[in-house]
Length: 195
Image (cartoon, rainbow, N blue to C red; front, side, top):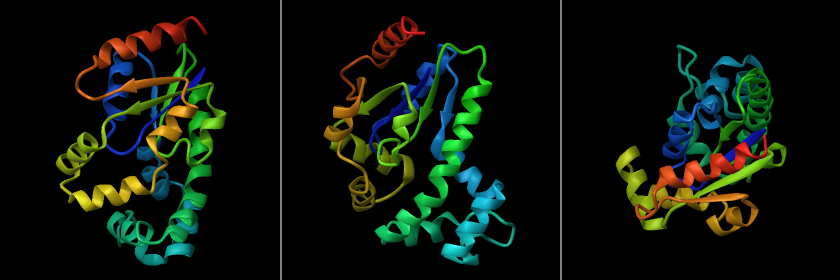
């Protein structure tokens, strides 16, 4: 089975995935892979250069994340163009990766925009991680050393938690009051009965 895990910025998706990893569940980190594919996949790289210009990469061929971020976070049309290039490549790569996980009972694909991209439709089950907005803002400000306004802007580009929860098979509440380990173990046990 292929399980998708998503949640809005600062919800704690990575923390949840680390707990699943302790249960020996393979995790595909889509956002990390997207960044790698933008450098390593020549087709993706050429498309990015074509749409965003040669300045999207530095002299060493590395992605200039700040340059690209400045463009896409302030221009929804350009963000859509970038997603149109990157999301299909990530989807192909993740499906190929999942097929290689032969001994696993199930795999998890972690992606911030799993639902927005439509890629959730290829998953067998969806887990949504939720957390109060003020807590998510504090986490991202501490993690990324950014201002509150930056976090709110990034959050505004994502579907609301309520919309994601409506599509979820499982919800993990990451508010500091509910045990993450217990929630993960419960979902893991339920998934193991479906394998």
